[in-house]
Length: 336
Image (cartoon, rainbow, N blue to C red; front, side, top):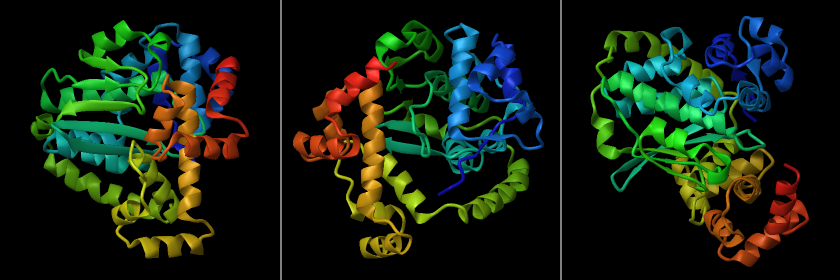
């Protein structure tokens, strides 16, 4: 498995403080000692990072903490991946660099899917056992829009924001005001959508000299980190990105990884797993997320996970959880 480590920059606490979060209360509630941020290279797990963001929402009070934390980021708060994106020639190239190098700081996969005049950005936390906190999603989306504004020098707006959270559990007016576009709730996945034509917009912050300096180092770091990433990790990521209302065929996943289905199956067998086992793992995690965080019916969830019929999904879910999807949902909601 890839290492479950996320960079925890000391500036993160400063950013929380700037938007009114009580830092001492935040760390107590998250169960993370302040000394962790004094280390040379602070790291935390996905669960710890999520705990920080949940605690920020519980300790700050304001509904727009995530939005304000992700907007107007000071230069010394930006990651190297963000700097590489900001100094790219166009918005499209910038987003590609961000997606490529984001994995250096956390186990998160960024997918850019361009179709039907839209550029859809999706963020998958591949090692998460729970849904990302809503304020973290707000922060990520706000930071991407902020990147587009800074790079183009224009008042950029997204075309649409899609959120898995329920409309009743969010601050709809705040989100609509900030992003200035349609906000859809109860979606299968969290998506930030731009017009496809926006990808060609030039960046006034383009700096080829700086890119020539930092990109080789980032590529070297990627190559080094690849040694810790397994084929199973790559298959999980590919499945997470492709499961959305279509049958997750092994042929399609194998093609995305540059190999034949037979070779993929053989290499997975060599590391003690199978394509079906990984598919079940991803489907299980996705089913729990969709049932717990959306209002989608069991039939709709079954469709999104690529099951041919509801009965097949129900049998699979019962094997995973020992109960039916709807009973599991009722139990999950009852414990919150």
